[in-house]
Image (spheres, rainbow, N blue to C red):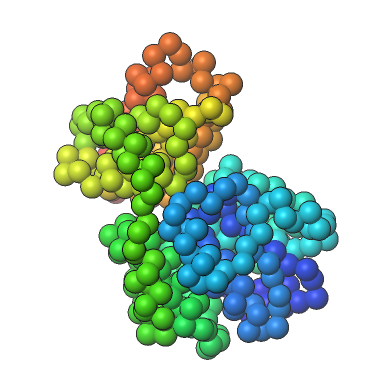
Length: 332
């Protein structure tokens, strides 16, 4: 897609850039970068999201990069005629609230699970959504500020886990492009003091409850835990030398929140999570990472032994996906 087509689409409208709920650094960097890109082409847009920004590193981005965002409670003026560009997520995804405006455009690096027609669609495989936004500057020779360049670089680093998760050549090329223009000091600041004292309790519970077998690491956090922290802990579990697939879940008041990480070439984490939670809740993501949720009212479907049922369902789908991959190899 030509990013200048997006510019033309949005001209003359009141525009919003919507991240997925509970946005992470990649989502915020992507939205911030896109907002600046559009501004350079004389188009205004406000960044918005639903949920709570839980991750300390994401909260810190607002201050370090001076990013203005509107939580759902502050967008009462949005109308049905207003345009929405979704970044790092897609319409109909479980992690994207359906706001009143029209989703006319989408920029995302995740696979599409429920098709949607947009007037502008840029959905491509990459390690980070910030990579796609960085390419907009590159392809159109649009100047960027040192702060925007630093935010995009940070978003790429975070979502690729420093270039070891789902990374593509485009991620590397675009990181090199923005890093040359970045305020490196701001990137450095983002790596300082990014864990809160309360996080240690969740880490302790995850370590106490871990069960590893056949390269699959399961762990349960038996209390309310923010989405972002669950994701960080799943990265931590995957770092164990005996784990190829990490499945971390927290039992919260409203249901069970899952975070899945994967290094097994035969498995797609997004497909695994979607298939496992189908009939109980919802899930999705991409090859290396995914998330999902089972509402509280559906937990009884996994009774009476919740942990055993969750593990059994995931192992069943992992086995089926590996069988399908083996069959495909034999037919090739």
